[in-house]
Length: 397
Ligand SMILES: Nc1ncnc2c1ncn2[C@@H]1O[C@H](COP(=O)(O)OP(=O)(O)OP(=O)(O)O)[C@@H](O)[C@H]1O
Ligand SMILES: [Mg+2]
Image 1 (cartoon, rainbow, N blue to C red):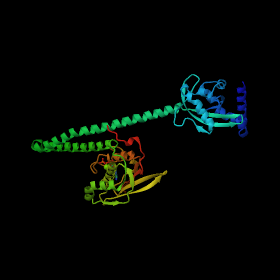
Image 2: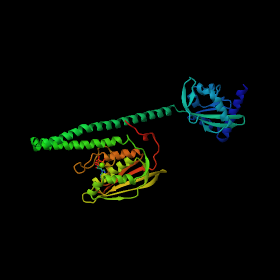
Image 3: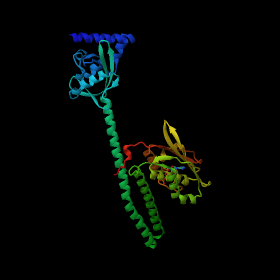
Image 4: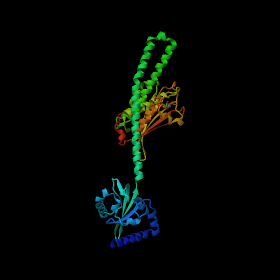
């Protein structure tokens, strides 16, 4: 009885103290309409005040609450240690959130549990210390988070399956195709007379078509392997992979009498062989989509900029070729999408899709600026440093 009187005195004092700063009505409205449960308890753990949200969350009536201790709102399996925790809080009463790094659960009247987040605020009254627990029910957030994790895992699995399927399929398709080409060539050599002019023409087309298919499968294999056998990231000057790409393209550069202008190229944390592949595709395109009337000129240079405090490496590959209409910008980075005629400019339409995949693996972006007849500039942006992540461990099929 004495206890109850003391508690009531505490609550009255609490209300009065708060009323000094805010008028009592406003205070009550805030407590009543708070979107989280509010439970005030004393140093011994007795509950002295609750708001309607707490009543709704826990299923106890306001009257029942005043008969309870704060431990009654904790699942029985966590109760044994709770006394000590409460004493610890009153020993150093400072506003803080409860259970840092642990999942917290609350206990309803009907014996069920629900996940919560709790903030503790000490309220110092002359009649004794109280603590305000503000409680948020995070059942929905937890469910959404779990759903998201499940979804991401599923996506990762199906991506990996798709990649290994593409890789295996394109690998296995190469062998029968090789046989078709080989037999076709033998037939053309051995049965030239029997086949006649028309027969040889048909056979020639078959052999050329299987040659195209061979290139298509080879490029598809390269595309599907971008995410599968990463060599890992290392800090290196991009001048290395650019030089490697230029030597691979040496013959093409000579045949076209192309002018290559190399500017500064910064250091970045990259997968070296993928950078080689990237620059080979971009410089190869710059040489291929040239204007007949003009000596092809390719400029390659890079800078380090900052975006929202993160250092970003930006490399530009600029040409003076035929260019393209920017309304098709997104299309050219998609698999098999080409804007220019196959007869004029050979290719399978995989090069830029590979570039995009490589850059996405590096957490960067690739885009282009161009106008028909006015050359094109491809811009690659990469973070200077790679953040460690799970994807960066090799994924074998
Ligand atoms: N430097 C460029 N200038 C003008 N158009 C370009 C340039 N680079 C790419 N394109 C356009 O984008 C399309 C897609 O390029 P992508 O490199 O993916 O394919 P491709 O070069 O045609 O074939 P592949 O690279 O597989 O041999 C090209 O067909 C071309 O229409
Ligand atoms: Mg290309």
